[in-house]
Length: 169
Image (cartoon, rainbow, N blue to C red; front, side, top):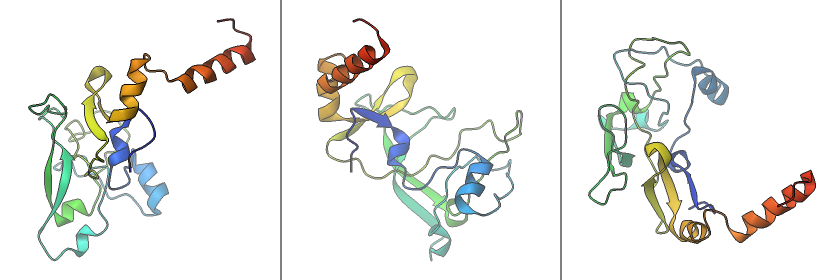
């Protein structure tokens, strides 16, 4: 279900929890984070049902297509593109989170993208500021950009804040 915002982060589409650090993983799961394997790409999510699969590989219908440097690749329409992600079931079922240290061998390669839920009819992917991939609610984004990214409700809130702190507009 699309969020009631003009735009939001790609993480809102993730099918699985994303663990920023090894500590985040341990707090969220109550399990010790597996050791980082520098021979594999970093991976900050896991599919708990993948290990139970009767097949060798697990396919996810939607994942962001990225270049070798980890940046999203635009499709023919200029928007970030999605494609199928296929992983060995053992890979899909575990995380590979690097330690919080600099210069860790293997941590400097792009991570395995997290599978995404399908886009809703009123959602689209777009490149935001700095090339960051964002999700746009087409209707709300169009309404917001007509007024310079602020809706009437946003302006009303800003005026109320300004009055509260004694700023004259």
